[in-house]
Length: 189
Length: 189
DNA sequence: CGAATTGTTGATTGACGAGTCAATTAACCA
DNA sequence: TGGTTAATTGACTCGTCAATCAACAATTCG
Image (tube, rainbow over all chains, first blue to last red; front, side, top):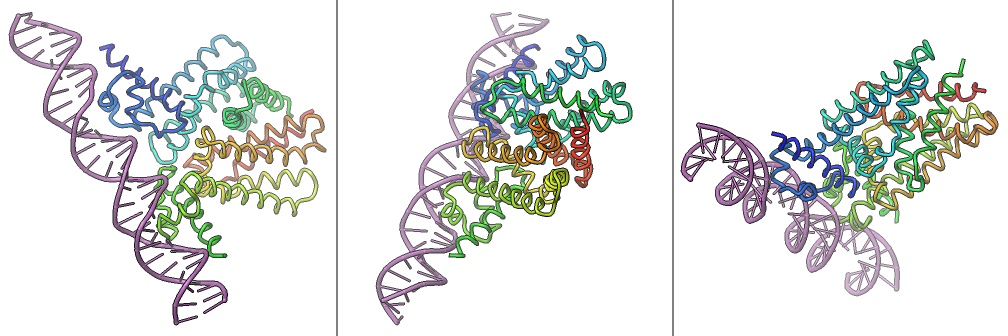
């Protein structure tokens, strides 16, 4: 039944677009269903409730991100280049689209109270750290763990700041800043 | 009319506690009013609507933070010590209390759509940057601007990660990480 | 004191939304 | 073809909540 998969993926896409348009999780399942060209009942049929629908959408963002990272790593050789590739992906345009930004921000809110959201967030944190760590190790040795945490934190922080800064048009300055931080981490004695 | 000021501040405190307890902005004005020992109508009387009440609560967090920074700066001499003082304040225990974390996260969400929230956030960003910049200038010279942006971003990012990490008990590791980043920024040629 | 002003209440309204479910339609298959 | 199952609908229920407002209490002051 490719039908079910299609419908689910339509609903997930509609969820992201609707949340992106309104900025908040306060959108009705009816609005989402309408955007997906489907009846409200179907969304409940496939996802159970609104939170599960949103978490499915968030999971799709996270796996998409993971896929992009893996893809980028294929084309990069050398530790330094691999780290740069990951950072490039982290600030790719697609993550600054309205749906993605709104999803992330609301995901943070939900992570305070939903065990499943908390779980997903922890996985993301760990994976991102260890991806960086893997290639920092040969470059930074014993200081790699701490450096990876700092870079990861910086990525999240700059993402927040740039995503919410309406005056900023593209993410190039954010990328430049993380790259500079990487330089500094690596050149430090 | 000390009465009005008292009531407003009770309502603001109740707002933060209620939001902290629920994690979300989805709390009723009635619940907030009850916590403040007051009728729902009074909250509307004083603040107009729910969003204005929340923004007033957020403003109180921001001015509190500002006050703490100013206070900490009084007791610190030397650029380096002043920066460290600011960073210490940024990760003070009070900012990790439930109400504060929930307020910040929901504030980010609101900043996407509310002009007033956006405005407050921009002011916070600018102020924090320029506070850091002031004392980085003599230490980092021409690289101070970029360094200030990076430190500010790192603070936000680490705050996010630590505030949402249920396994982390205190903020000492976060502080250590920012301090380390500061060291690295300053030691870099 | 009593009138005027200010502060406060809480019942009420009107709108809305999550989730259900009985009914309908499409897809499949023998 | 008809009969069976799966997909899909959308009207409906039941609860909820922001915001209002008419009434009531407290305070101030002449």
